[in-house]
Length: 253
Image 1 (tube, rainbow, N blue to C red):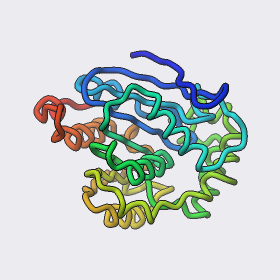
Image 2 (cartoon, one colour):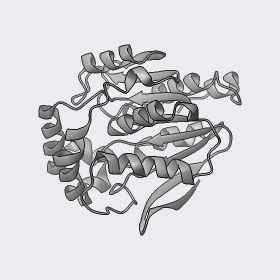
Image 3 (cartoon, rainbow, N blue to C red):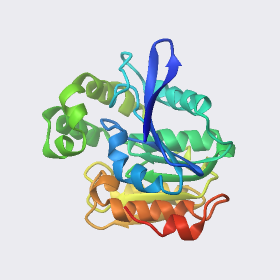
Image 4 (cartoon, helix red, strand yellow):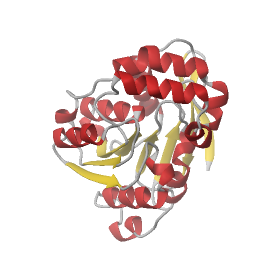
């Protein structure tokens, strides 16, 4: 596994972790997270894929350039894709707010996406739930201490910007019908931030989607039930050119 920095603009860069060889898979974490939320998937998918996992601006080891809106995060992603040595088509996975970024990229650049996977995401984040996110994050609740230790300790400014600017702009309902790639949607039956009905509506609007629900799953499905989520991702991506279905689907986290 290697770690490197990709220049974005001026002194701003994104930290990227990469492992494995084969068809490319880009993992995009959610707000208040980091690439480490995909630790299990990066390790196990790297057996048969080239897996890349960036830290979003102000998250993990990527610097915070200052107040940012949702378009700044999206522009970072498009610049990152342009500057990484990616093939013309690749697999894209997004979690929560990273799911918004992944869905938007897939809708606007359909020619680049072999397959899409959206984990614990929706077309928006209801205002009341957005405030719950900020309170939980800023208060250092057990969930965020466990999954986001670096952000809980250092990220209050980032969290407030996410709440007050970025998450309020999150609305991707009109993007979903434009997504052409086969899409795996993963929801948690007990996700406190993404209501199951909203996730189901999202899946309904994406033309070629497949929905999986984790019984008892919360908001960080890939860390809470890594074996199941990694298996679903492997099977989802296995049917595409350059990937052996038997090899890719045969391992678990």
